[in-house]
Length: 335
Image (tube, rainbow, N blue to C red; front, top):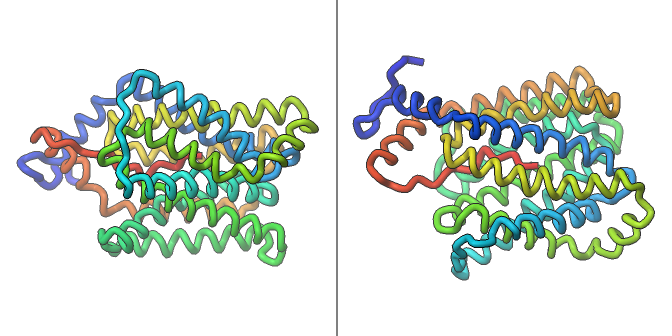
């Protein structure tokens, strides 16, 4: 890439990049590290708690804890009243991302190792870009189509590596894809909501909606918690407190300081960390085919993002002009 990028409103890529690098203060670095480690750890904890709680029950327990802790972050903050259309988007956002996503992810890890699951879910950014292109009129650029095709090939390779004839593994792959799809739906709704409503308020409301959507699992949660070991109960609390409450907060802080594209690249480290943690705690190692497929998925995600290179310059130009720029959360791979 040329050291001086295209000019946007008299501002070139190089100054924008310098500003982004300058924004990497110690607090921003800590926020990024905490977010990535928290989301990576979620895959491991879900895998460990899975034998004791069902997918829906675990999701409800996690969201109950998350809703309470996120509510504490709203104390003293300004409340923005949603419009009727925003309420609809909030319901879809919460039911899809916090509700359906957590349930499908939990079920997926009943049959797939944590590393393989994280690699499949990590195609989320491509699905989000495709959804924005098709449903939001943003178009489908050439590199996005190429990246999507490459990532799909990676998912197929993961399936082959896990024994495509094995019903349990195929079901796990399908559940992982379902998690990526429901996450995509949630983020597309969130992109609209962030234009007017603070991210902390949106996150809490979405978590509450997801909790309500998972209430049919309440009786099962009560029964399973009573018979589950203390470690499983602590795992549920951890998922609600760290990957849900803390990680969403640190992600939002980092996103307010850096371009979304630059910050989104950091989430590519999640599958690698999950694989290492899975080996340490469970002795699980994805098959070579699955690892190769995961790498291909990441390559597809990287290829699909080639169209976003001018965005830092645009953001910088808007910032200098005093225009409010809403961060693009399409790279957010919250777990």
